[in-house]
Image (cartoon, rainbow, N blue to C red; front, side, top):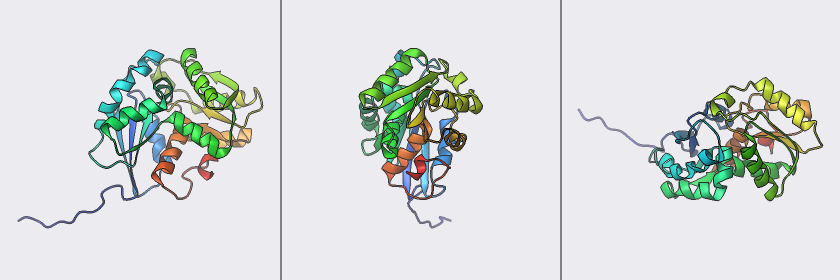
Length: 246
């Protein structure tokens, strides 16, 4: 017996989102679940090839792999696709990231943690930043230069100086919280930005903001917020964070 059936709008009647994640990233997918509305939003993930060592060369090499990674997402109409690599977006450039993804998904809006962080800082009125990274010096310097070229000042800076993304995923939230406090204490700033999608910040953001008395933005918080904005999603703040009240 052939059974009758009806069709509907599918998993994402509110929005359909895509996320391109690094092989060694253990954090972004888990934190993104905390940042999106609980119903009406479909989120699909794809992985992109990259060695675990984070260097300018390995980061630049992802540009050629982005169309394939975007093409591995389901054949649905995406509202927004996020590329989940802050340092990669810095080296490739946000425009290069968007062009590469749109070659495979021409109808989707594209964002990345760098673009999202700058949009988040502007939404919160932050110009003078404390800056925390896990990166080796050459990668941190490139990101700092990009932020400064876009009108932001770096008041204080600190890095864990770890080149292996698998190790970055294991940096304890307590260490990240201490780093935020240390960088904030270096000089007067409007807020602190913690870079890297593999650093676990979502669970400590509220406590960090309570301790330093100003906004704390991470790559994942910014990316989740910006994907919501670009998709036109509204609703209550999913976590206690000044960014999601902006």
